[in-house]
Length: 279
Image (cartoon, rainbow, N blue to C red; front, side, top):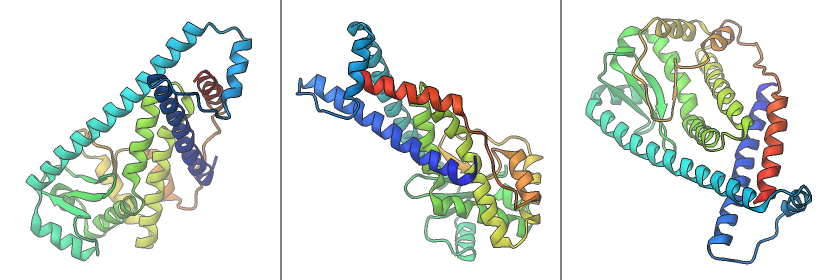
């Protein structure tokens, strides 16, 4: 599977999960307000389950449990992310170095609030924020890297910024956790961030016109002690898919390839048909 197909699978994941959530909403509203059932193309599946003599109480309890869990997980993760966003905003404001922030914003031609430099001893380079993403750099990172290495890291983060990658990562995290019973969602949530990081690496290499500085910065960060765990959804320069990224930096023309998860796809399709048919 190449990058374009993985991206297609990402969009298919959003569509399929959206259809399921929509069906669940319709199901819940119909039963809460005792409305006349709304016809949908999956109603034909109900005939199949009746033919298989699935006991109605069992189907009812299973469907209700799945719907309650799914919506509960979605609400919980959204609330948790909102709380972590507020905490992160306060921490950035508390530790921000205003002069360095203005300096780097002007130097790299970023708009207001698109980059923040914080006074922190450990090296940090990440992009946070769903609707208005911003790059976070630490003074520890600035001291550790050479000027060209830092430039390469910032170009990498600018790619995350322009494509709103933290939003994609957050959406996949919510979907894969709330709908764990559909295995293809977990697979996409695991593989798609790798493509995001490689895409950002390629962008940085193109901007720098060589891969030496990006590779050097990545190796320096690998040698550092682990940075504090960040619970907020984010795209970080040095947290994931290191082996694959190093191979791509050594050979920028190498194509990203994954095996089709056929078993997961088949199980997921059967699960979706079963759920929507019961709903």
